[in-house]
Image (cartoon, rainbow, N blue to C red; front, side, top):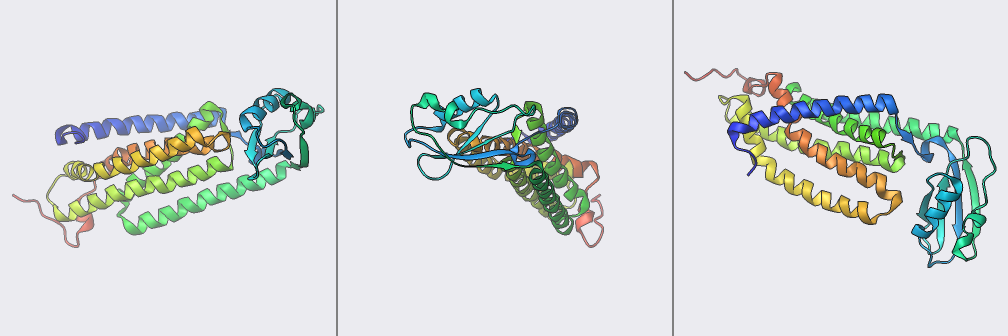
Length: 299
């Protein structure tokens, strides 16, 4: 169903090289271009308005984007006709036109219910808390992998996690899409999703090492992939369908989250099969590492 066993090792090594190159390219992109931090981190203006309930966000957004010369986030407030607008303050201190003026072409009454300014200090605190959440998640995963697997096998899962997160960040750096709290939530979700795939394959490798101690490690890896690939593809495929629907139908506020998750699912499946198995093989994983007594080779 996957690739015959003779060619599986060659494909795993080839895709591992591709993964490393993508990872290096993503790190360079993050270093050179950086992330386009959203208002959640940089601060800005948050306004809540009320207008006719028949008007949609697709009618509001173009008018605000053109009038304020920036991308304005338009989010439903949960009640028909009420919207939350998020946009940045002008850097040169120019006076901005009022929301009522910008929405005049809609020919409806526009009421600004409240307006508040989110300072950069609040954004800095959010960035620090988000970074701390990511660090805590990574440390918990490290502790779990250290307890669950021998370090050679755990290294593959750990590298796959780093690969998936760095590639997603590299994509956002390359495209300069807004990086906000919803995207950060997607990055944390990618960690969990990628870990799940890697653990399933690593568990199968460990079982095969114990059950067939005299087999070569590359054969064990290929057999583990063959045994889990159907489950991996079905899980990834159904999740991609859900995330794709969220991407297409969720609107602008959820676009960053959906795109990050879409990338994370694809790279998570890819990396768990490639680097997740090739790295322990390169480090010399053998059955002896999971046996109480060394295993002697058959004559």
